[in-house]
Length: 357
Image (cartoon, helix red, strand yellow):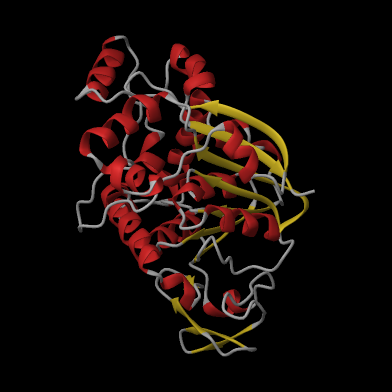
């Protein structure tokens, strides 16, 4: 078993740059990384092995709300499991997760080259509970995981510490100001995260900056022309009136991703993209592939439809898959063949591969 990263190893990482002055390198002082150029300090948590590499500009009101909301959701989904993982149980969970991703035709199994990751430098932006990053590290990638929410970065660091011989490190960082030098990573991966940022265009500029020439970004963003948007999100926004008096990203945010249980902050931002909007958003990349997925027969604004779908599928011999525990916080019933087929046309996920020319 490896141990959490220590401050000396973090300071020695040549890929890091100061998010305040955009230069490197760092020195260690007590439990702080100190930029040698501008003297900005960044706290290091010895217990989790996570450095908080966020600039003062990352402390805007909306980013504080983003951290609060996703921290709340972390406590709902992952906190209890994180207290119980062992190396053996985590390895089994990763194998289950990979199998579930294959069944679901997920971005991490279709667009991500799992069998060709060994030795590659992979950055995951928005690592959540660390399940995706743990899978990539298990496949031999040199993984860097970042999340603006400290609890989520710590969760990924925990997974790395439990994986024998894994190459992985996690940081608290802002996707709009990544603490890495230009041309650092072979692959940047982000699953359903960048559309929740304060400025998605800025995050994509950062993705392009830190990619090596010819490197690829493998991303999932939400689709406007989907059953989830037109038959669930929009009707709710019209019925509760939020669609009439809030910017689109804000009212969609309040409806999506769940409800708070440990505070009052709701999801601040969720954006959706049509094909044309997506092409504009990705204009600085070469688009390699676009694929839609993620439709389920409960993607409609009908009360208790999710429970009805799950009950019906269990009756038909389709139990929930244990692979969901690591990333969804509970076992997950994968899509049926019909749902997979319909997802190609009305799914909520744009699965994207773009290249830095």
